[in-house]
Image 1 (cartoon, rainbow, N blue to C red):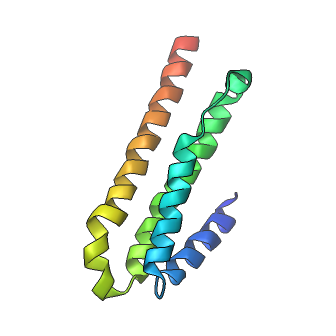
Image 2 (image 1 turned 120 degrees about the horizontal axis):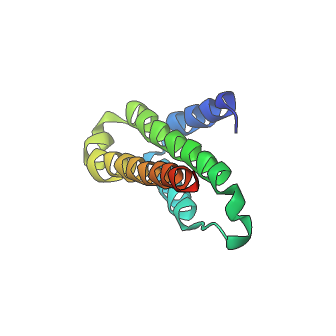
Image 3 (image 1 turned 60 degrees about the vertical axis):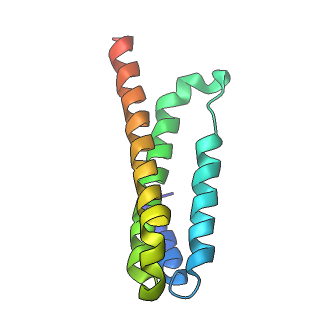
Length: 112
């Protein structure tokens, strides 16, 4: 997905949080959980760097989406959801993207 498309998805989900915060956060959580379960098969290991790059973009898009959801969420519902559902998931995807980057860098170092 290109940058304008990602920004469009982020905007749509952020605005949906204004009146459907629970539904929006559940959808984001399910998407993130499904993405974490995807493994790279041995047959496409040569495409690993490409796959990790796409996954990294998706994780950064998820982090931006959670941030935008927080901005647009109803203030009376935000406080109860910000720590576990929003900040927790941003940190989860941040750590996972760091691990992906670490694996990619380690593979490049070992291949030289």
